[in-house]
Length: 399
Image 1 (spheres, one colour):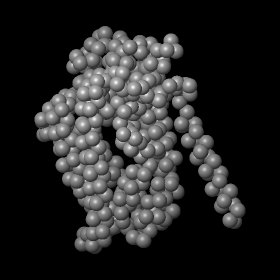
Image 2: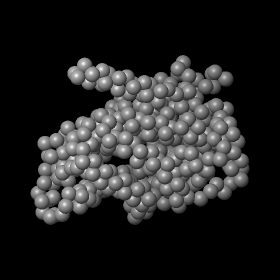
Image 3: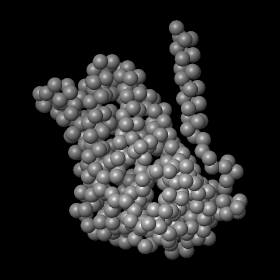
Image 4: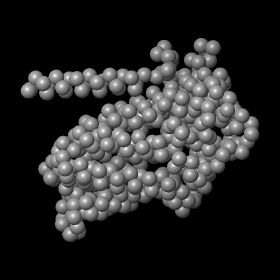
């Protein structure tokens, strides 16, 4: 029996590594130079110093926010047994109340750090001093996150009540299915409150890029965010019939050339072409099993996840585990972002616009071209500007 268990573990580990290898592969040539260029070639010393000061404050805020979140969850997990007893409700009812309490606690903990971040952005001209819009604008995202959290709690407690400490064997596939469903529905949710492209020339550009990247029929929408930020962004979401590309209206306010906007569009369509949303769900599935098991081990002394009093401790363990695995998550994200950049270069055949776009990103977001190593490992889910510029230069040399 022991030999059989060892053989089963080895087979599962081999399957895990095989799946990870397939998800890890990208279309970026292995010989491509993405080590980064000397940022002084593109940015002045004053620009680099300003970007370093700006991101240093943001990095400190991140560290303090993580520490405050862990501290708040630690206090909540210590007091949760007494709170649950005072509710006088059943197991599921108490679990829902504890879940709502956790969501409200984390919202209040993160609120001052978000306020300071908004103030810091406004001070550097990256956002208006409109804190009311900043709080209420992302209502759709906050609502979906709250709903997904409560659904997760209900599933965990239900499975743990029936399967005990082995709930994760059924829970990990269930969560993967839920994440897949949210990824699909997210394409439709992201389109709420957006509008179509008004510029006919830009619509023609989209059609051309879609044909080149073999993603014809991908809707491109514009989201109004200029009320609470001046930074630029775009993202792809959904898959299949729900796939969408969403541009922030700040990208179309005249600060960027048509070539730069075309490059951003090609980048986001590249995400769709290479099915990065589905691949990200695949990575979630790979990590769901070990993380769910570790959370189970962390809450075993509290009676397991069937006990609503153990929920804050479970979330605390999950926060710590996500912090530990963040370097791997960011590494995977950077590979997919690099692949989208490579797709944009091949689709637009315009390295000059790509070069100008990445140089302008420093001006419009004060991104540090070469951040400190620790910040790069734990916080950067995109290649640095220096690395992206190195890819552009390598592509130009190859042509």
